[in-house]
Image 1 (cartoon, rainbow, N blue to C red):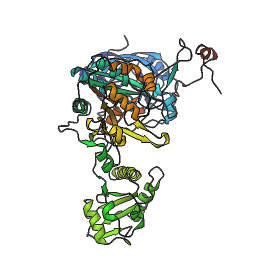
Image 2: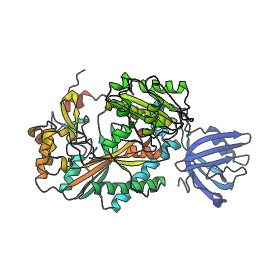
Image 3: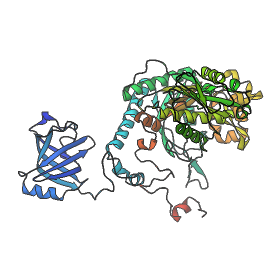
Image 4: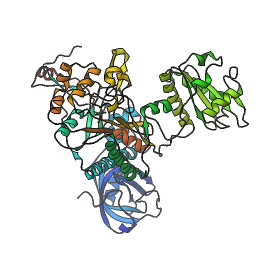
Amino acid sequence: MYRTHTCGELRIENLGEKVTLSGWIQTIRNLGGMTFVALRDRYGITQLVFDENTPEQIKNQVEELGREFVIKIIGNVVERSSKNPKMPTGDVEIIAEHLTVLSKSEIPPFTIENETDGGDEIRMKYRYLDLRRNPVRENLELRHRMGQEIRKYLDGEKFMEIETPYLIKSTPEGARDFIVPSRMNPGEFYALPQSPQTFKQLLMVSGFDKYFQIVKCFRDEDLRADRQPEFTQIDCEMSFVDQEDVLNTFEGLAKYLFLEVKGAKFEESFPRITYDDAMNYYGSDKPDLRFGMKFSEITEIAQGKGFKVFDSVEYIGGIVANGCAEYSRKKVDELTAFVQKPQVGAKGLVYVKYNQDGTFKSSVDKFFSPDNLKSWADFMNAKPGDLLLILAGNKNDTQNALNVLRLEMGDRLGLRDKNKFAPCWVVDFPLLEWVDEEKRFFAKHHPFTSPKTEDIALFDSDPAKMHANAYDFVINGVEIGGGSIRIFNAELQQKMFNALGISTEEAEEKFGFLLDAFRFGAPPHGGIAFGFDRWCSVFGGSESIRDYIAFPKNNSGRDVMIDSPSVVDEKQLKELTLKVIK
Ligand code: ASP
């Protein structure tokens, strides 16, 4: 037997028991005649003690031990003379009677401690060692808990978990596919699913009115901290529902997870913001609602006073930073430099300090009277002591830049606390998005998303104005999920394809199976998919989804541990009738 207890289990109640423990050696401390060994497993650490009474043979064994050796120990639980209240097992220690080295270890390439000396690269290469560290293991524990609770909740709501295939053909999410050559069908390829979208819709046609799956999805995109080439979705679909039903069902799931996993209780409904409002007030379709600082547009009241920069632009808007009127020249200059960075893209920054004594000081005093400035301040709901930060330019770019500035000010003012959660729904997305380089519309969500009934007539007159029954779920400025009510009628689907410049033949070739299915009685349906890795990272308070994936890839899409992707041998290529062009 390798163990009677785990390394996190023994307490003062166990005094006098003879126990067997197995685990990894965290530390060895030699203090004169005594040696203390911290033995670690997934559950915790227990102290082993070797002193003058330890049999000679064990003493000799202890001298040979090193960090990360795997050992088994049989011994007696005794009370510690100097207790460690920080450790759950800190009241006791084990006096060893028998020690077995199960496995030796080389010196690990970095310290297996909460704060390690290993850089990113080396920890990725030895990910299995990194996973031994508490913070990394805790992240996976959080992920596990989330997965279990999600299944529990959805099962309780009568959702069925159904697997869909990985070797399929292109799906409609609009990213680049990973493709897999078929040996048995030379010259032909599978695509890995960007999502199970078409399959879950087929399941609705089959009558499984509530489906979910915690499922891998694959998208060949450029990577960032919150993107991986393979990632996991909580993919869901329901029949006989409208948008309201879907939002309510999954708001239920979200509230359940908040409560069970984070202990956060949400009594009220989550705010719902239209896409247009989200853009106008926050410059983003994933607003961080942990703090206010909404944009105010002052184009009308700020133009016509002879300030050329303002008079020539489409949009003038700003935010109010509470209590920042005292900002020094240096700080304001810093902010100006910040908004002028290419990633932010503003030309300049206009500031107005609304001083405590009611006077104004601004970067545009030459053009605007204190009365003018007061009218802006009043319009923007500023109080004495506040700082107004104003940007001007074309509407889209300026709102984008204001969004970045707002988040920056939120950070500076400590308004983006990781332990505070502000969920919301963004609704009424546009149906289509014009892409100039391709001179055509793309589906904002995907081609199966249904337009708002009242907008269908616009297909022929003004498609850009159409709104969709599409929604996103956002927490703290991070898009956690998105979905839509689907088109379930072949005629409307054809109109949608037409608007996207997809010919009947092309639609038939790509999605014929789905269009066929719709001819055999398709129920009205809709759904949503949540980014599981992202949801975990937001709950865990991290910006990187990698921290919540056991074996993630680096920014170039490489798994540096197993060294993949890698070349395959000629024989394999030949079997696949493939040639690599160098
Ligand atoms: N398949 C969609 C996505 O991956 C989600 C959905 O519409 O349910 O974004």
